[in-house]
Length: 576
Image 1 (cartoon, one colour):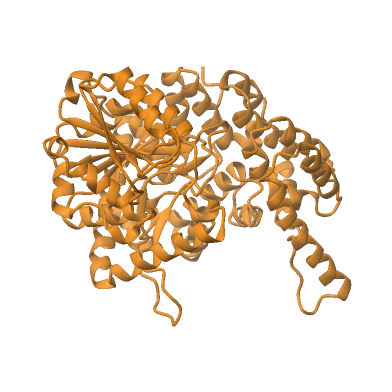
Image 2: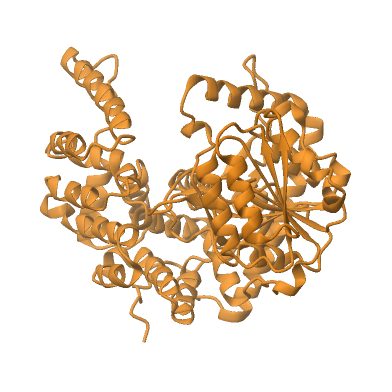
């Protein structure tokens, strides 16, 4: 029996097709983030007035959006619009939507507002900055004191919950977000929303077997779509894959337009191949490090504990003056000198040059696949076999990568698959964002919507598997990106240009201790290096070079998604 049935109130929808891509060129990129959903709904709404299919998708997307992202700014408004389009949601959910659609915005005031209102907005902006600082510290007492002040505000408590919620979950201190929910002055109309947020808290703060009963208790007439998705995901995490797959299959028939759900469900039906240890003869694993002895030791221990078959390892000490050399010599003893060799440089030559140094080794050139590992990752036991499996009989893939998450619970997402936006940046007098990459997870919570496999433009360089043929034809890594940042993306772009795209294997998750995005940069110097390298990337590629690449990557994503949608229709049929 399916414990996650939901009311069938949505009109039937078709899955993705190439026709849809004509109106929405970026549809296939993904829709796990609320901002993406909001952008698509705004465009769909323009078509909905004259196209019943667009109207049906708009209603379904609005219902999914308000259930999956109830606190997202603007989502409640789209819930109200779905009501106006004819969706029957009932009085309880309607009251929730009305409340969420009217939440006051923090830190905003119009020029015409009173002096007191403008002063309040200024105070709120300062408080938001205070929260940004607090959330990156480990002072529970101060955090709770701040939350107690802002969340108990009867007018703006929910607005503050909206602002702080993801940060609260990512603190990795489950008692703090739980306490925060109790601080809000919930009205009778919004009490079901508290139950929904408590279920989300359970998903990210409790083991799946303890979170599942909390999710099951949610009212399916209010939260049925999200309840079904999360219920299916929790079953999969508990090892009950077939039961979880059945739940997600029922959900997909209601919202077959959902890109991430389509890709995820396809992989459940047709799991990506996993290589055997015997198929690793032509793999070399490369590691380079500079002054991260402790982190490197943990990385190498996880490598030792993993199944790498017959692969050999070469480690480069990139000019370290800490205990790195001792860590590498110990690893050499653990693996055996015949499998683990060490190279030592007198100075740090930066990441691109270090990679090229290793790639120039004769034994590396003789390999078919080369795995690069950052010196601050924690590898699961089957990492290499999962990366190698889908490409063991393929020569057309330039690089294989995976899902990268934080190293501690709740394992927030750091990166997934990267693709170019379908449209080019308008020319302005400002420096243009020429190479516009769609980061479809953007540091969010890992809900399971990225556990899929598909070709893409680029993958994270924290743990990736390079095709040596691709390396030979793209001349390795560009030294202009020293000390680091964007050298992986640049090389992957060049690999795409010779017809060897990346492959994202999202069913594999590798934990990454350090952060590397602009949002996570820790000082002005680091931010300057990142911005400087982004400028180098943008000025390297003209629109003349990027336009065909955009078109090709979009068409590839469209074909992949359409083929998988057709497969699922053949397996499951469609709602009528």
